[in-house]
Length: 81
Ligand code: FES
Image (cartoon, rainbow, N blue to C red; front, side, top):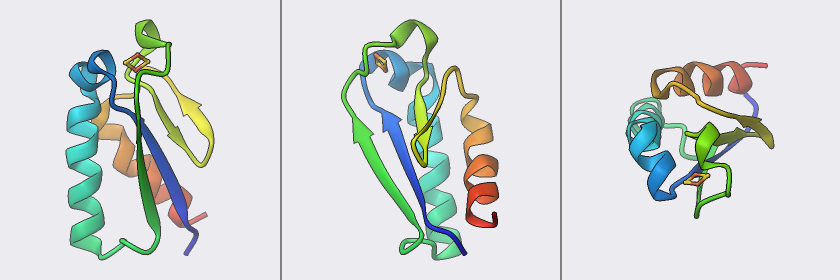
């Protein structure tokens, strides 16, 4: 299994636009599947790209306007690549 780094913008705009839900989703997924050693979570202050938020990076690749319900699927895909 690969390791995945997920960086979430925790600035107020991204947080309100979906990253609070995305964070909840990914934290439960990690816990339920015991993936603490495989998924690294990092939060950022505003990345200066609010109008295209919510902003998330997965293994350095930027996703703009990401639906919070899609994050787990994307992470799962990276883990199993
Ligand atoms: S709050 Fe995320 S880019 Fe500004």
